[in-house]
Structures are given as C-alpha cells and as structure tokens.
Amino acid sequence: MLIDVHAHFYHDRSPRADWRARNASRLAAGEKIGITIHVASILGSWGRTSPTYFPSPADLPYGNDALLALAREHPNRVRGYVTVNPNYTAHARGEIVRCLGAGMIGIKLAASRRATDPLLDPICEIAHERGVPVLQHVWQHRRGDWPGQEASDGAELCALAGRHPDVRFILGHIGGGGAWQHSLAALRAVPNVYVDLSGSGVDGGMLESCLA
Image (tube, rainbow, N blue to C red; front, side, top):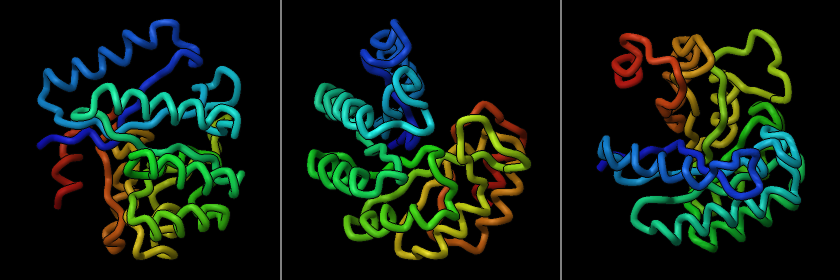
C-alpha cells in the first residue's frame, strides 16, 4: 500500500476556477503512480477570503466540509485531516471534535503559530485524547520570517513533540524549504516525529537519509 500522507484539494470558494480539474488531476496522477490513499487537507479558502496560513473560523468549516464531501465521493481513495487555526482555541477544539466524528483521521496545522508556541498545546492534548496524528507545515530552516506565515522549522517541531511525547507528529515538506539535513539532525532523538517527502526539492540521498 502506497499512502500520500500530505495532499491538498480545492473547492468552489478557492481562487482556482479550475478546482474540479485540479482535484481530478491529483487523483489521476496518484492512480498512475500507484498511490492507494491520499490523506489530505484544505486550508480554508486558500487565501481568497482569509490568508492561506491564517485561515479564519468562517472559512475553516467550509474547507473541512468540502474535504469530507470529497472523502465520501471517493471512500477508498481519500482520507482527511481537519484543518484548524490554533489562535482560536475553542473553535479549533470544536472543529476537531466535529470532523473526527465525521470520519477524519488527523489534524492539520498550517503556519498560524510556530510549533514552540503554547497555543498549540490544547490542540496536541485533544490529538492525544483521540489518538490521531498532527501534520505540521514546516520549512526545513527558518533563517528569517516568511510573509504571511509563522513558519516553524524541524527543531521547533521537535520541541513541541518533546512536550507531547504520546502524540505522533508528521513533519511536512522534508523536500521543501531548503536544509533538510537541519531537520533530520534535530529529530534523530525524537521518536514521535515522522517526515513526509512533500516539497519540490528532491536532492540525491534525501530519501536514504530519512530512512537511515
């Protein structure tokens, strides 16, 4: 079984007029290369009515509902992460309970707060209670701030994982954001952090280093 653990889809309130074609293209590409299941998220309105990395409580349920609908349409191929913004703690916890109850299997954190921020702790506590993983959007180094993001690097995610040793974390984009060696060095001693291969940088030896 080949699982894509970090996918995204679109909906009719995203900026893309071709959202249906894009969704179909992802599924077709996955089928072509043998992907069995896409575990995916939708980040609010993808910037149309609130920032992609700081989605509003008004946009998050619509995106999560669109993903639930897609999973119902493709029950053997699509699973969902519930996307939340930890700056709105009560809303985030309520949305997690609602969407996990509807069949989602994990939690997606974009870049609304750095992984070292205590605001992420209530999200991690409910992940522990429900036994689901947390996928954290990560750049593999943070030498400066990215516009519109509170981007974390691997070392910061490992600090969060150390505070919540019973929660499974997925470090997103080991192939994106530059110095993946920086992240790997940080997580060697942190057994509850896993990496995904998403990103546009596919350096020689990267996969082998992740598995070593």
